[in-house]
Image: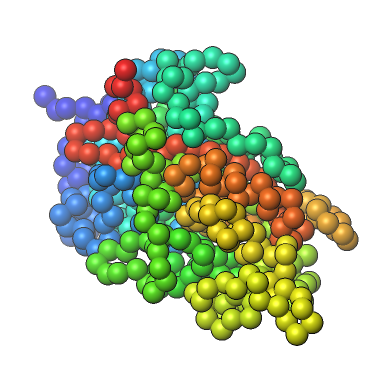
Length: 446
């Protein structure tokens, strides 16, 4: 008897699936031959052994991948609302997602493909032949997984870490419901946008009846694959001050700067419950940038706002991108070289009492829509719906993002061009070992 998948698809060989698909395509006259599928089958195989190992990022390990991994060029970030009413159903979903994530990141289909074309496929097939493309899938839990509307939804309220506080309302926030909140998040990063989208698409399919989309955002990153600091849509390098270097496969990080230990900045330690030790807290903020307003500004003014030279990335008064920031430097008239309200001054550890976060942000461009600028001349009309999906990982959001952004939200000169319209805070649990599922310790701890 043929074993069946959860969706009802009989598990058969991929060869059978492609051959059957080829026969069907030929019957409707699209010119796809079954023998062509046979010839291509080795290259389209879902076997991880046949994928280039340099393109596979390990899914299982002490920490979740996609946090300290060398950034990929594309992102698809999705947040889900749980519709499941029982903790056991949530656990079952996470088991299913774990199995699928391990397969997809290795270049396989989410579930083995079946040959019965009269039932829904277990994988949409749109990424066949594209390879793993360094795909990483990072999972996180929102505060509402523990308590929602004052109710202990799944009996997990007592297991919420002390550091996992709700984000406060920051000055200038204009959060919209369609880009805020949710119960679970999935960060899919890959060097191919279709691979990243495909991964989330399969997870959403497997979650049918248990979880549904709340919001999602696609993003891209320039300069991610060549080791240089990427530039955001404002034309400035983004992430130069990151205190911890990414870990590309097979070589050392492309930086000579002194780096802090990841355990001090990113990973939750003994202060956290067991399920969260080795995990990290993610702040995700959708930040719309008034690009029309920005593009009308003089370059020297832009540099004063940011606190860096636009083209070199060096701090004002410097020549090299990674040279130390001199916050006390003054010009011949005694004025600070880096203004008091400059973005980099307010973000620097020297200005935040040592607070540090790991930025892993992506630009987004969702076309144009009717908007109004936040500052004079208050232009209204069809403007770019574009900006930055700010993403930051930290050991403790209270001493990380919240401490840093509380001041920045009030006096950062960049605020005249940016508006925070989406927000989420997620606890990304420790990594997944062999035979484990995402967040397993959370459901097992007494």
